Image (cartoon, rainbow, N blue to C red; front, side):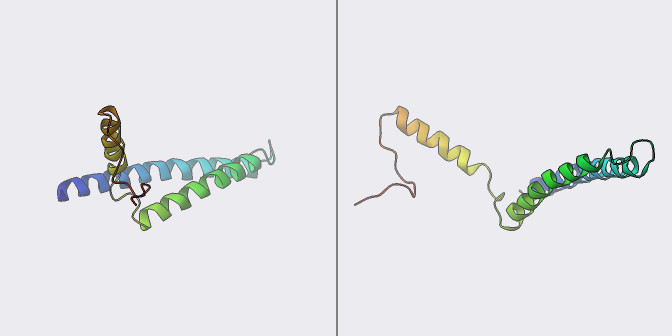
Length: 102
């Protein structure tokens, strides 16, 4: 399990580095377009839209990572498949926090 954790962490860091590099490159391109005289202000709307669209996603991802939301991402899928099998067998769905037992 330790090797898998290291591998997934390294892959995540690699993806963030590549995506971050592309983001920085595109932001630099937009800033240089805005600073140029030939098309003044062309990139202003694009930069602000890009930043406003990216910021909530970044904050949501950081919140999810820091609160442990990605700890066991397979559990909901397995639970859904288990419930589906119970329904196909004709049994009642049970065991979840949404079920009241009196």
